[in-house]
Image (cartoon, rainbow, N blue to C red; front, top):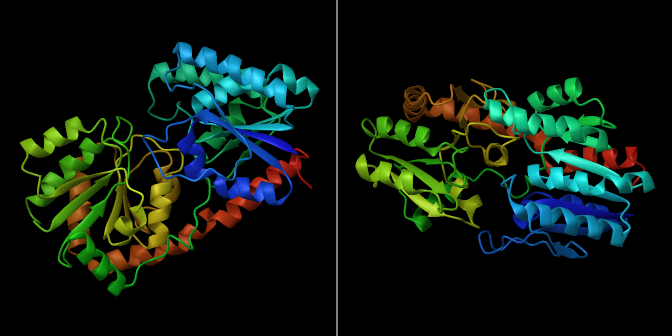
Length: 379
């Protein structure tokens, strides 16, 4: 079988889909990739498992002329290469691919779309619902399998997008828990020494690129309140810093430069997360937050905004806490409570490792293989 993997950017494939692509190749499939190369922003990702790679000028902006060029280039690619299936990801990648593949479905091309979090969700703007919901409703009939990764999206898809050939839920993209395993006390101590932190520091980490959706300001407001009481708190912020100006100004204006570190894009995120006491997310919405799943595997307690995606992986009071979106005071209170209660941290840590198992690479790949078998793409 010959399969094309499509995403808006290269890093999406490199970060999330290489293990399953390798599995498909083990089964004798040829797997190509089509995306815009963003290696300059996120270097070091290995996509060598792909047989062939094609540059497509996708952009995340729906109305960009580049997406029209992407449509025609992708349509030409699909016609020329006689693929058995195309598996598309990311909102613009999913829209443009399914439009480009419409006529080829009559010739047997199977179209799979994984929705990594619909842009319409509980709390989204009316504009998002008007644009993205109606686009998805229209495109469902050109989709042989629609894959969702959280409860809310799955329920919407079952209710409103029944024209899709099939609809299923898969627990994300899979995390390699051979890599994301809890550090021993000695390993944490050594990592802290290497990176310049002390055993007395209470380390919090939020790995996320700086953008509106990730909502860093909520977290910074909470840390300001915590720092007034606990000077040993340190917040680590790995992520592309192209849009972090507002956050830097907030820290400068509120005396947080000793408490907050901007770490830019990191390839050693495993070490940073592994030595921390707490992993957090203040996102306005998620598909299924891989950073929190990785944190659970590392044994980190979780503190997160109570939004779609976050509340799929965090059971409030079991492996962490959920707080109302933008309630910085509630988040600060929870952080202070955990700083003062190491037994609760350990309880959350143990429960998180137990709950993380279903998000591992092996069960996710097995579910994906069932999807491909149902479409008769593999034996």
